[in-house]
Image (tube, helix red, strand yellow):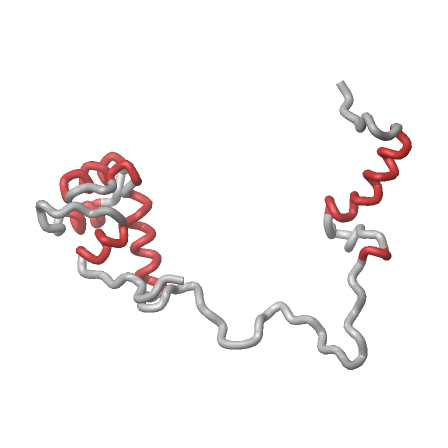
Length: 138
């Protein structure tokens, strides 16, 4: 079954689809397919060219208070502790990490956690292992 608009005829539907095809398909290998009337105008003589980099201090990908290695290691820990284990204590976290085939070094690190404490988030587990979390959240 062919879908079409019930408000227009096939000829008008075809014309309408051609009008937006450049917007839908976007720029390709051969350049922009957008009609000339839809292309943005260049900056004027007294106007600066647009930049892709914003003005001001550039913020890196690391949260404040954590290094790139800290972020990567906490993320690695989070890949092996699923949400079904949280909130959970040391034994639940170790069992969950083993279920998810965590490497031996992560299991050994989880075994250092104190018994009897329940952890609600991976960040709490990370902090209990003696690592730093971000100091501020955005």
